[in-house]
Image (cartoon, rainbow, N blue to C red):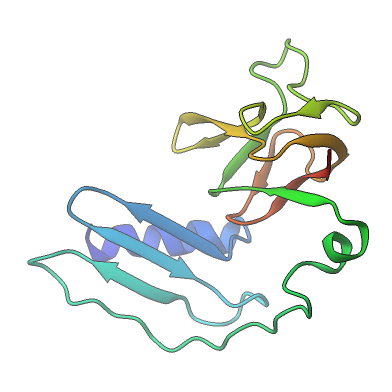
Length: 156
């Protein structure tokens, strides 16, 4: 991956308000992270054996929420299903199909709850928890970021 590609990724991150991007290939890995206000310069970690050295600028840690979870999760006991990648969130396998899950749907760890399209690849996202869907936190066909909550599940 050359500097031109990295600059193009940074521009896409800015245009789409994406704060974190990670790409891993057989011979290289790149991780970009921007400040939450969008004005901070990206922190770049680039690993490519035999090419560039690894660069990891110091980044200020974001404040932690007391109790180790989000306030809503800690107060209600609900579990969040988070996006494992950046991409476009889809609730159904096709525009004509019904959504994978609705509020009140019982899920188990292997239940597919949505699809995230990343780089023209459709990735099925599984619940990884057993319970009942209580909230859908993202609108269909909207961009999502790595770690962004997608659903809330009440464990059973």
